[in-house]
Amino acid sequence: KAGVTQTPRYLIKTRGQQVTLSCSPISGHRSVSWYQQTPGQGLQFLFEYFSETQRNKGNFPGRFSGRQFSNSRSEMNVSTLELGDSALYLCASSLEFTTDTQYFGPGTRLTVL
Amino acid sequence: GENVEQHPSTLSVQEGDSAVIKCTYSDSASNYFPWYKQELGKRPQLIIDIRSNVGEKKDQRIAVTLNKTAKHFSLHITETQPEDSAVYFCAADYSGGYQKVTFGTGTKLQVIP
Image (cartoon, rainbow over all chains, first blue to last red; front, side):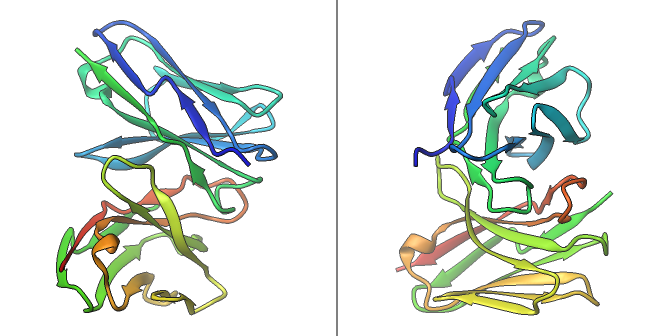
């Protein structure tokens, strides 16, 4: 099976802009989670989607949002970018729950200037 | 919410020695504890996990122990090899899909040949 893929791999944006990141899960996986990884804060949970519904959300402002499509592909959007949003954004897919084995994608490196 | 503390933040061992990384968690509802290995520039990969109905789990040179009463769990790597050098993350989650998975801050393991 193909692994989790994320596009784009690298992005450079300026403050105030918005960005959309995409994640394609492993075939058959219905749970998609998003994480932010930074040197200072480590790995932090953003949100999880299952069957096109956001099932859980981490402690991030409303500028961070996402959605999931009927084929389980997911997108996350960050509006009004801030310098502090510079990070590696990882998505992970699993069969049904985050407590099933999660497989991570390669990540999207976002740089906000 | 859940809080996961991980120690040490860095660990250097000689090749062939053992390495131990410890994590404590705060929420007694957590019942799933995965460990991830992240090599430089790569995605996190699950290396072993344990559920709260088990006290110990082993997979070749890697083992994890869980003490539910004390709310701590540990990763043990025996006969370390240079390819074990990476950052290791512990995490705590709750089976049922409705808790935010929480990660430890990571341990950078260096295995010296």
